[in-house]
Length: 90
Image 1 (cartoon, rainbow, N blue to C red):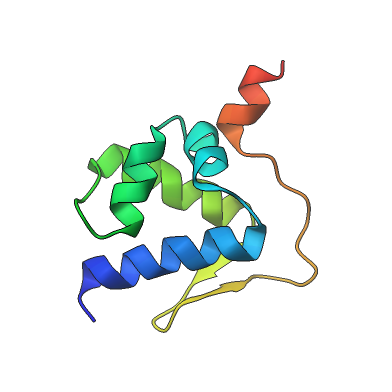
Image 2: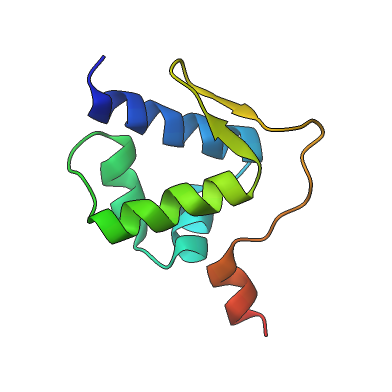
């Protein structure tokens, strides 16, 4: 599996563990839903800054990225609202 397809699978799996839609992650990371869809579909690499924010939001929500996939840092995971959504609700 290439690095891009592994990352695509990890982001999809992380969202599934968290119960987040592509739109929710996109809103929380302040990127477009198509950015998330293209990343997960291994269609294109997002800009480095966008990828950093996406990965940071997933990690902040308690996701660990491993060589074989993703897992919760602790279980049960703590409640986390992505930064972009918190800022909109202020």
